[in-house]
Length: 510
Ligand SMILES: Cc1ncc(COP(=O)(O)O)c(C=O)c1O
Image (tube, rainbow, N blue to C red):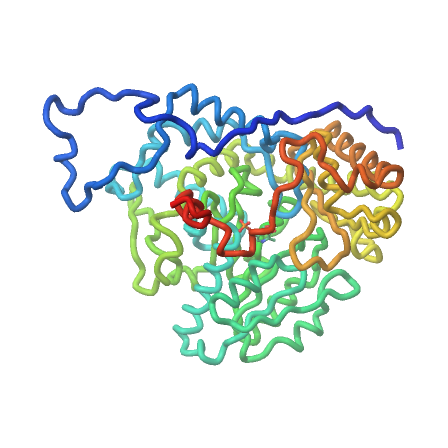
C-alpha cells in the first residue's frame, strides 16, 4: 500500500486556570452607559427578583477573555482536524448556518414573546418540519428533544400515552430492541417503566425474524431499532419485523441516527414505522452536543400526533400559531426546543436540496466502502461479522483484536496515538462492546479523498508502531496538550461536579 508522508503535529499547551479563577475586582470588558438618566436601575426590578449578593462571576477585561478562549481552542482540534467519527454521522458545521443563526432576528428572539411577533422564525420551523415529513412520511414533528436519546425517550412517552388511551398500558409492559441498537433505546424504555427484551445478533449480523416472533406477544408495547445499525449492517427484513409487531398491537420506532447513507433512498413511513427520529446535530450538519444544545427531531404518524409534546406549531391561513392538544403528553423540554439549531439545519437542508441529499447519501456509502477496502489491507485488522458479504452502508465496524493479541496494544492506545498526528480520535463502539477492540470510522460525504487516505495512512503507521515499539503507542498521546485525562472520578457522585459552586464545595473550598 503506498503511503503519504505523515505531517508533523504538536498541540499548543497552556497551563491555563479555569475562567472562574481568573480576573480581578473591578475589571470590565465593556462599561455600559448609565441607564435611563438618573436613579437606580435596579428599582425597575421587582424586589422579590432582586439579588441580595452580586453573582460570583470573574471580573475580566475583553482581551483577557479572548486570550483565554483562544488558548483553550488551541489545545483542541476543534472538529476541523480529520474527524472520521462513526455512528450518527458527525459533520462539519457550515459557517453560513452559524452566521444566519447569529443574526439578531434569530438570536434575539425570546421564545416567550407573542407568536405574532416571530412569524418568520415559526415559518422556518414549520417548513423544516414539512421537509422532514417529505423525507420520512411522518405526519408531524416535534423539535423539543435535546438530542437522540431525548427523542428516544419521547417515543417511550408517546408509547405510554397511546396504550393508556386504549386502556392497554397495564398489559403492554415490554419494549423490544436489539443488541446492536443504540443504548438509548433500552435505557429510555427502562426509564419509562417498560421491561426490555434485547434480541441477540445472529449469523447475518442482525437478529432473525424467528427470534422477533418468539419475543412478540400481547405484552409488546413497542419495537425500538436503528437500521443500518452502528456496524453499518442493514437488516433487509425490517418491513416484515414492523408487520409482526403491528399484528401484536405494538408501535414501531425507527432510530434514524444512521440516516446519512439512506437519505432519500427510503422513508420510515413506507417501511411501516409509526415514529422515527433524526438527529439534527449529526446528519443535518448542526453542532454536536447530546442532551441539551442539540436537537433530536421526533416525528410520528397522524394517529400518534395528538400525543406529541406541546405546544404544537400549526399553520392557520397565512400565519402560524402555537396550540396545545388536550391529549398531549406534556413537555419533553421547554418551548419549541433549540430553535436556532432547527434554523441551522434548515439552512443546511436548503443548501443541499433533494438532489444534494441523494448525492451525499450515495457518496457516504461509496466513501465507506473505499475506506473499508484500504483499511482491511492493513495486516491484523478485521471487520465485524466478516461472513456478512453484503456491503456495509455509511460505516463499518472493525476490530483490532488480532493486533492486541500480538502486541498488547489496544484499540484505545491506537486511538490515542493517532491523535499525535493531528487526527481526531476515532469512535470505538457503544458500550457494552460486542466486538473485541472495536473501532468505527465514518467519513460521510464531507471529507476529501486526500483526507481519507491520510487518515488511513496514519492508522497503518500506528499499527506498524504497535509492532515495532508497543510502549510508544501505549504511552501516547505524546503531542497533545493533555496526555491522559483522569477519568477516575466519573462514576463517583462525591467527586464529579457540574457547576463551579458544586466543585468548590466538593473540594472543601466553600
Ligand atoms: C444509533 C444512535 N441512536 C441514538 C443516539 C443518541 O444520540 P444523542 O447522543 O444525540 O443523544 C446515537 C448517538 O450516539 C446513536 O448512534
